[in-house]
Image (cartoon, rainbow over all chains, first blue to last red; front, top):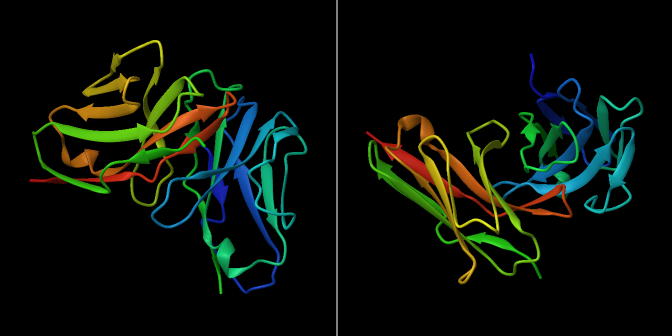
Length: 115
Length: 111
């Protein structure tokens, strides 16, 4: 499809395990974002990529979280030693460039459940 | 600090009526506000935006009003339809790229 694609749509893991979440942005979009949404809350900013580099990773909660975008397209969010508090929907979004309009195109998210 | 919040967590309206969703913000460091709609199981979808040099902006069936004096933002949906049922978020754009979302208002359209 033409939209932002995220896999897996659902991931259940055990506390302490390692998890990778993948995002395939809209073709041609140079800006890519990760957000985290807890139940009943609005999305929270995690990290922003412009091309291959992380322009702002100030929203990552701690050093267990890391994200890459090696070729400036697909991005992977990596979570080490998962904790129950990491359970949330992880949303990826992309835009043509650093947004002038605030119009981001979001994927449907990856729901992570840590048991 | 900056925050974006909503007055009511839920709103129920009858099909065909107009809906008004409100949002308050704590300061005006950012000059750009955006409304997003999120249907169940989906990611947020852009609806409309407004900059602080404007008081009003209209789209298709939607109008956003910005009152900088009282730091208040509203989204008006005309002739609300069942497909409008969703959670609506107001958001502020910080640093030119990071969206700061409020908690959201759940809109339920009844027949």
